[in-house]
Image: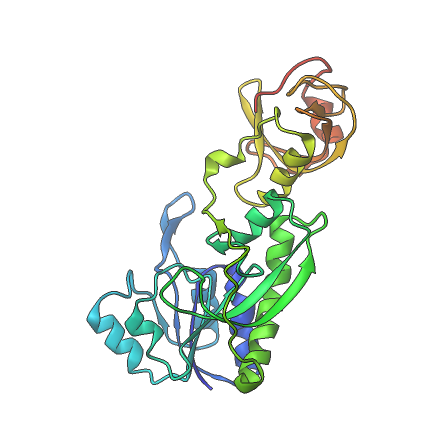
Length: 302
């Protein structure tokens, strides 16, 4: 097929690779414009942009798809289908209807649950047992289009980063399967029951509220690993908890219940197993406490 590929972050790179490997003709890649990054705030292209240039594919980075000239240039590519994966811009009707088979999206949830911007994090935060990927036809509504295929996986104790890697590859493989013979994957309308919305993550959500039950705090740690990182403050410094598990010991919320970073919560406690001090790399509690005192009985500020 003649494919227009539309994606921006690391999540969208495996599908670009998979479609090219499968022999499809990727006529252009659309990605978000380069953003200021790093200490020098120089413009940095997105991971999909970088990968497409490595593959010798034309990259287009419009700020918006609402301009008529941008839409005409999109239609002129004469694509069979546009494949979309975490692109980040709204697709107007003129864009949605331009390819012969429309636009198909790789969405990282089991629709209709978790429509929207942050499905992986919201699934973890809510304590869902499973999540996955849905291949869907796009329409004007937010992730409301009919579904063609799904991949399901248990969440267990996976972090958002681990699930992102797994679902990115699963979505890539599933999209190749669908495009291999679209007729074998008819589009089925989403049910009206079970609809939830995955709001964009606000960095303020990453501050740990130790008055919550330990099981919720542990989910927060996994949902915000690697970004933005669940954190607390102690001694005027910020510490990110990268990994922890629940222990059934009660104590005051935010209190250090021993000398090895067992922190009391609203119900139960969390045992920190990996932590990051501001400006430092990830370390074990033992490594941190060897040179930094956080004694039993003191309190952290969530």
